[in-house]
Amino acid sequence: MNSYNPKKILELSSDFQKKAQNIKRYEGNPYVEGDNIAEHLTRLSRLLISVSPHLKDEFPNTENLIEDILVTLLIHDDDEVIDGFDIPTAIKVHNSKDSEEIEKFERSVSVLGEQTETYLTKLFTSFRKKDTLVAKISKALDNIAGNQLVIEQKIGLINPDQAKFAIEYVEKVRGVSKIIDALIDAQIEQIKEYRKSALSNLENLPENASRLLKIDISEHVLDNTKINIPLDRL
Image (cartoon, rainbow, N blue to C red; front, side, top):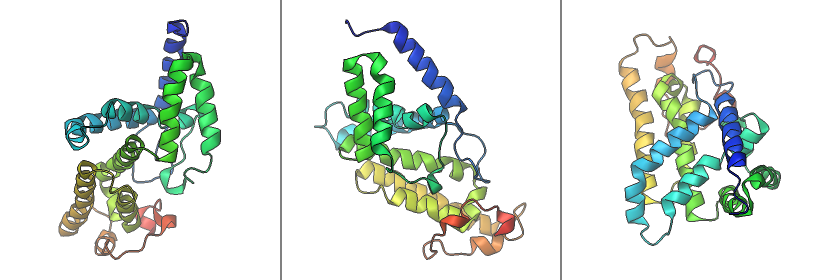
């Protein structure tokens, strides 16, 4: 108990929460309104608890699976919270500053005591390396949740590059779990179904929507430079 400092825990928790609420996601994306890191973490938590019993059934011999995934998800963006900004996924160079981010994270949570610092840093580092089942499932859920706002707000899916990016974003995390793969399949189907239904009902959509929706997503080659271009410029 010597390293247990309740005051420091409350201060760090408040500090990270306030910062997370003020860091916007999807900066520069004309198709998505709202969302910050704190909301993203809540979304991830909801997604995890919704599949937790199924993951436990799939991996019955993995001790503390759900606890470790939940902790990993809640801290996986702490490097952005520490820095005070989020780099949009479409333009982010992932894993380019892992060592620096791990060092900053470890330094930030060191006020919680050695035991907690070791536990959290191990999970944070593993997420960067994707070297455990927990880390791989966490990354898959992160990508799935990252797509949800685009799908919920729909208009961006008319842009074939935004839709294709969303599909490829979850396809890259396929294979870690049959439960997660089923989520990926369902999300890709949501994207395709919206494009199909929108083409059948073009009322209130931009004039070029018909042309863009007729593009076959399965054959379309992604152009990252067009993801954040507004529909009226495509």
